[in-house]
Length: 622
Image 1 (spheres, rainbow, N blue to C red):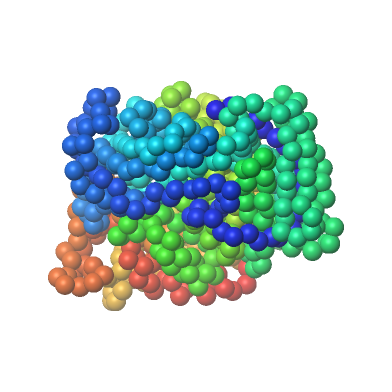
Image 2: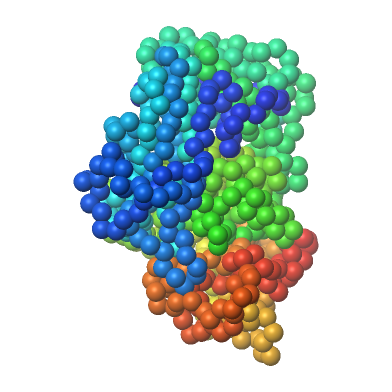
């Protein structure tokens, strides 16, 4: 397809239309959508040669499974299967002349798609970002066949570089077929950037040109109140621009999106017979220099939201549940959101991959800020010098930013968790390239990454925010008393060397859920975990040098392949639900096949540290 980029400056207000059946924003009220959630024919095989797969071979899908789902789920300490899954279903016939597209909200690791026996395309940009294919016209129902492969390799899964978590696979989020009524031109997406808190917006329309594009296409903007605005723009090359005034600006009724009052607005954008119903919020992310009394530091740069200095307090959060893996249900998302609100959090780092749009919609509605990052934990200097790796990393960034552009909760974009930031060539060839890729699409948000090289990092000039990962009382030789001095030293180093906000992106300690009543405060016990996290959180909330703390982590998670194999399961008590360990060997790196640094356990049972963090996060901050 050929995409035409149309730029528009506008101002707007809230409206309301009947909800379409799209499972997340935006909505498409003039299109016929077929959400393919439900039962599909299914099969699985090991050692498949992908190039030899014949989609017409019915023997590949002898069973059935639900979509979305993962095909490699297993209890912590038990390996999920690695290989190739096959999915088969039918899409409805289109009306005469209708155009079509299909959106995969997530499919991985590697995904290859056929329709009616013809190849639509393949996706190598990670199993977490949304991707689209055009669908040829047809007035007949057609068979959709999907191959999903979860084997680690550099050819079909080039950006899977490891990570301290289990990588689930399959068609893990919704698949949506868009039937677009016959029209010479339609909308691919609408991107809305707040310029001020008073209704001034920058709007960018991306058009899908199915035949021919008029030289001055006209758009209708319906804000749900007042007259529908009509704007015709002159196309010069690939772009056009116009200024309009909408009801929100003219009536001075605009209200910003904030943590305490997450106001949201809506607009229907129509060209021809095609409409996208978009939702957005008015918020401005920035930085500000303030005076402080933190000898020897007298000035520091802090993060701002809507012009006000803010303290971000929250968690790293994986998209993972025991029963659904990565294919988390909406009710499970809502349960996690409830715990975050109960804790007093106002920010989440989406570790370590692009997020489910339903989760981001909940963050929009609940006033929870988001750090959204691409898949890329454990990236090496060799990875960055691999042109195929960098190509697919940049494509992943594009898919991530395009999908989540209108979510006001997204405050910052990230990449390369704990990468080779102490290598100058990696900084220039990798970190700068990734930051530039993001900023070419979006200048309204800040760019960062979680850096474990800390004051040895050479890439920090390319970051808008300086974010450090460290666990001084867990991997270090000291106890909780070392946390505050360590982080104070890091914060003062950043303040002395950079005019940028400082964020503690990961810190904490592990606590096994079953070790709640130890006689002494020992590592792996909940008492020790609570003492460490209390020290970390109290320092971060009280220091004027720290803009943000995201504790590692919200809940315990299933460990990666290597730790799953080497650690195995704990000895579960028979007949106890949720599963509870009777004995667990903590001499292993990930006892029972889990990372136990959660404030809740894998089954969302609260640990002792929950109430400690809750008290601190609901208390005063500096």
